[in-house]
Length: 427
Image 1 (cartoon, rainbow, N blue to C red):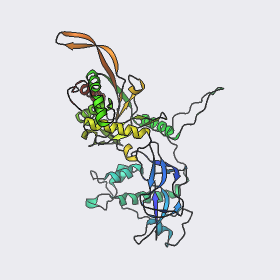
Image 2 (cartoon, rainbow, N blue to C red):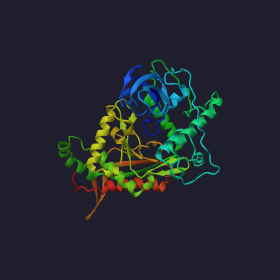
Image 3 (spheres, one colour):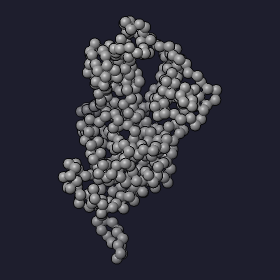
């Protein structure tokens, strides 16, 4: 027999904590590996968490309603068979010893720190994610001695460093923690008949993220008006056949997504993230798609590798993610890895908007409502006034790394692709 500590898993990009909604198993129950044993809620999705090992659920460490940081222990599982004892076993003692209620600190191997930093060294995404979550600076990483091939820092190296740092901080545990960044509090007058509503969990997290994004990124928004008459006519011509063939609606969204993908290929420095003083230029184009939920909240599932999908593929993916978002069926993977986001304010009847950037991305495009209006059209016989379908594109971008020229040229290029849409193509 052995004891294994199960920790709160990572639920997606930028998610640092989860709330325990409820346990599906009780202490003493036998569980199988990958069997769902609890439900966890984040600001983006509610999901069931599977067991990491098969055995007996020995002890539940995180109670219902408790907010737990990613990587923190949530349960202890008693596993069968022989093998290398876990850290929990080593700290508790013999396998038959009862689990103590007080927290046991295992001995930690202190990693070697180099005298001079090693710049330009490769770090795996896992190591970088752990460093980001534990607020380890790049300078600290570069001074960390790696035990991997060619001196690379491994998962064990960085976890040992994290543990040694936490142990060193134990004597200062009573030191007051810095207060989280909050919006300034303003006194509100309440009159008779006013209704006071408590924010739900998702709304609280959205509020915090929006305030944080505005604090981090100096937002600038550029606007372009596009003539999408040919797209409107093309869709009207093909939507019935598409519905019959695919059993799914042909909306404007995948057409707009396709134009965004093409523009990103032309301007790859829009497809970046900021990490401290470093810019991460992404190879994959993963488009976030803001979806309004029945509750009024917004959620942003991600179309992975959108540049590898045809227009039909984009249409089916858009419909699938939107449907599962509204039915609360998204997985954590559906919400992670976004590199650029598109939101459709036109669905609410708005002609334009100034969207807030999804951190750590650097840009977000708002699609306005398609409106009929008179416009000057150039013809072989001269300029004429005609009724055209027009829409505004609003591009908000992070002015730390995206200047007005790049931000403006990018949204102009999206409009160009929409206006040059091939109306002779099939689907």
